[in-house]
Length: 412
Image 1: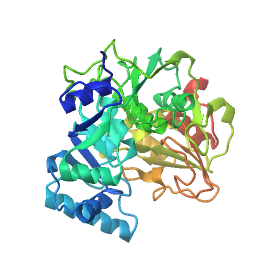
Image 2 (image 1 turned 90 degrees about the horizontal axis):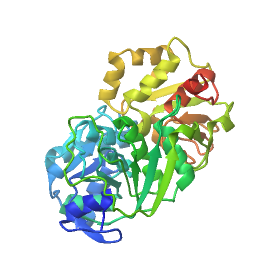
Image 3 (image 1 turned 90 degrees about the vertical axis):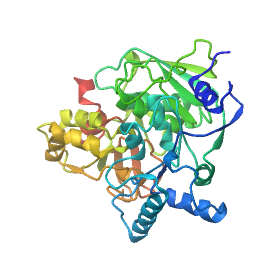
């Protein structure tokens, strides 16, 4: 019987062939924790499990990214505790300013095709961009992996997304991701894996956008086959690849030639419309960043629209690069200068305004157009704030005009 990518990866990890529905015990190659939840993982390991030391320090990676630099005394204390723990246990730690955990693990080549990567963050599905089985877990589950080196997983069924064609001008991977939210809904892939086929041509940063938002479908994992990856740091195992005999729970076909600019409206990711239906909606803030759309390619697209122009007086443009490497790329070719001259504000690489705790928190009744992944009530600050999700080119054009607009590339 054929196997999906998830079945192949979990079979290799468990040492025997598996199919959807089976329960497997596996040792993840990587276990990721970040500053927002890792302190609670440490507490659970010490107080509930009664274990002082992690099983395998080399298996664990810690990243400071959610509230960096620390925005309060309590946050600073938690981060200091995490630094001490990492030093005492001999765990790799990427500190303030290095970037978002998901971006950092891919940049550093820590995430590799065919691996199992679990993290204390729901967007750990991002690692599927390099052909890994990435999934998020709660603090208790992560504590158990820290303590034992192993975890259990139910082998998920798989939904296949078959993509044909190429993006039209002004249309991006974010539009595809948002469209899938409309088609599958926020729970349409619950505990399933989503495989994206037909994207060998797609660059890594766009694959990251798709896989980051797989969890917004309820997915356990989102995986793009690693064929077509151009980065030398990724080694594709011979046993990993598309199997023509694999069985899928469902197949969805999307023709990119017919895809229009998309937008998700408050307060649900799957409340999706063609962007043309929302033209003219006034906005107070535009947020360009997150593990979904905070990379150099996203910043550069925005700079091409804003070059020589100035954002509307009534709009704040908050730009949070996904990592210091992406920030430096934007510095080297002048992208950053253009964004700042246009009126943008650059913040520390990390999660930034996405989780509503600093660097762009929304006030009562404010409207934000975000390139992030979630628009739930209260996600970025006040519960009465309104969050719309769209692509970087849509965000840049809207910042320029002071209201939601179609991307300039699309109009031209």
